[in-house]
Every structure is written in C-alpha cells, then in structure tokens.
Amino acid sequence: MSTQNSLMQLIKRNKKLFIIIGICLFLLEMEIFAVAILKSGNQSKIVVINEKNDIIYEADGKNLTDFNKYYFEKNFGPLDQYEVKLERRYEPFPFRAWFSAAFGIPVGIVLLVAFVFKAIANLFGESEKTDKSPTTKREVNEKETAIEGMLHRLSEINIFMVGAVAFVCILAYWVVPNFVTYIGEIGAQAILRFKWFFLIGGILLFGMFVWVIYLRYLLATKTIESKTEIEKQRIQLTFQAESESAKQLTWQSENENQEIIDEDTPIEAKIVSQ
Image (tube, rainbow, N blue to C red; front, side):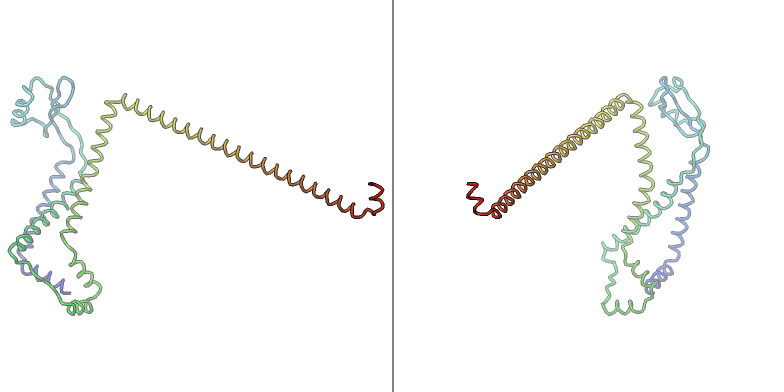
C-alpha cells in the first residue's frame, strides 16, 4: 500500500511533467507509425545502371533531385553516360521495424533520462536513503495483502536491469531476423558466384562421407568375422572338453566294472587263471 501511495503522490506532485512526458511519447509513437506507413505500400525508386547492367546508384522518388544529380556526377561522372530507370514495387508494412522502434525508442529514452538523473543525484549526494528497521519491515509484511506484496516486491527490482533486458530483447527481435536474412542472401550469392568451388567441395565432402561409411562397413564386417571365429573356437573347445570328459567317464566306469568282477571272482578261479 505504501508503494501505491508513494507512486500516486509522485504523480500528483509532478502532474504537469507526467502530462508533458505522455504527450511527447504519444507524438513520438505517431511519428514512428507515420514513418512506417510512408515506407510501405507502392514505392518508386530511381535506379542508375552502367554498361554492365549493374546498379551503381539509387534514390527514392520518381525524379532525381538537384542534390542527387550533383552527388552522382561528382562521384560517377556525367549522368548522360548511364541508363536511368524508374522502378515501382510494393513494400509490405515493416511490422518488426515498427514494433522494435515503437517500444525500443521510448524505453531507451526513459532509461537514458533516468540514468542521467540518478547519476546527477548520486553525484551531488541527493539520493534518498530508505533503510527500514527489521520491525518496520515485519509490520509492513504482516499488514499487506497478496497484491500489495507483489507490488512491493516489484518495486524492489532494479528498473534499470529490467529495462535493459527489455531493450536488448526488442533490439534482438529486430536485428536477428535481418541478420539471418542478410547472411542467407550473401551465402546464396556466394554459392551462385563460386558454384564450381562449392560443387567440387560438396563432391569431396560426399566422397569422404561415403569413404567413412565404407570403412565403418569394413570394420563392422571384420568385427563380426572375429566374433564368429571366437565363438567357433569356443564351441570347439567346449566340444573337445566334453568328449574328453566322456572318455574319462567311460574309462573310469570300465575300471570300476573290472574291479567289481575281480572282487566277485573266487580265489580258486584267480589261481587257475594265473
């Protein structure tokens, strides 16, 4: 509640200043919107072309002004030696540029003015110290509602940090798409201009990719063969061990049978046999 009261008191004390700021911001927004409207729709442009059909100069409007003629002839020579064309094209409404300017310019101006005033106040020692004791803070926290508490917490946030983040986001919303489009156009022009270089490079990269796949295929084949050979040797060793154990069991059973026969044979038969 104290935050709302202080804000309302600040507005009441500087009512004329806030009205002037609101009118200036409104006029600024209208000017930005008017510029965006003027830059959209059917646009006419004067284009000057040389003998190689390259555009060497262009200017907005249906005719070249005296300043444009003077500037062109000073840098490129007489205008009669070149071909002058009038181009017409439809430009869509620049929404991103308008949105970025409509929000970015006022935020930037407000941040700059606030920073200047705060720097002057700190320089001359006129900054207010609003230190509260723990008991006062506890009493305020007990009395304030949820909405008042949210407003109180928002008032403690550094407005310069919030404004800087908002300004950077708005600037990125305008710059990043234009930068990506510009890089794409330059890349397309470079590919068309040096198409043989990129074609040979693409073929080499494709060949290296195929070669790597072939090497991986050979490695996988060798790995499968080695695993198969190891499994084959393991099976052979297992079979040999089982056959040897079977022979050993047969020999042991024969010896046991022979011992049983010897035990069952009478002593006289053993003597006769000897």
